[in-house]
Image (cartoon, rainbow, N blue to C red; front, side, top):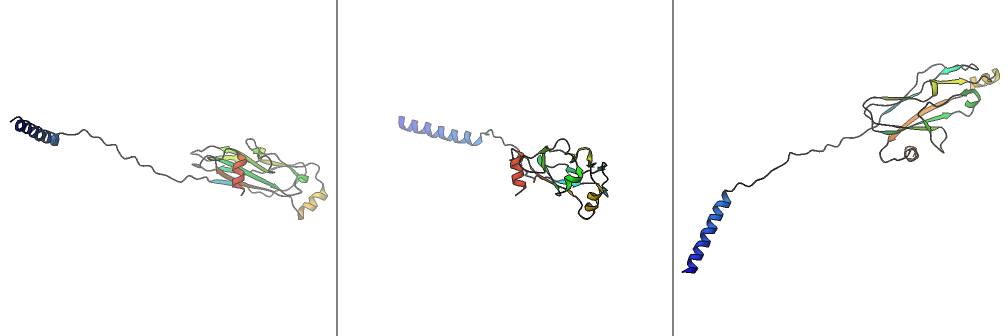
Length: 177
């Protein structure tokens, strides 16, 4: 009889546990979805200069305003400008590079600066005072020769993302490949 009573009690206990367990409300929770959107970063630059007819007169200063612009919403970047002179330019013209540019060591005529990301255009003059000066010791004979073989000064701008390039040297090595 004890075995029957024990079996009956166990059966009733299982039945009650099943009924109670089936009607219990479990506490649960769920988060809102988090969506990650990956957009493309970009760097946009421009190089402009007011065009003019440059006439060399000994001792005169000539307005010359090459300007590099890093366009709005560009990524932080290393900005470079390469200045190329004709072989005889130094006989006729002097100029200086504007403040904020640093000469890249070991590379003639290349200057750089770090530019942070910005929601606005960032514009940088290349030449100090936006001008060049004709040397005062330029002679008439030199100017006559220059009519057929005029000295030149050429500018080209480059930019590369700042991320992953700790130094301007490393960035230039990638840009100039």
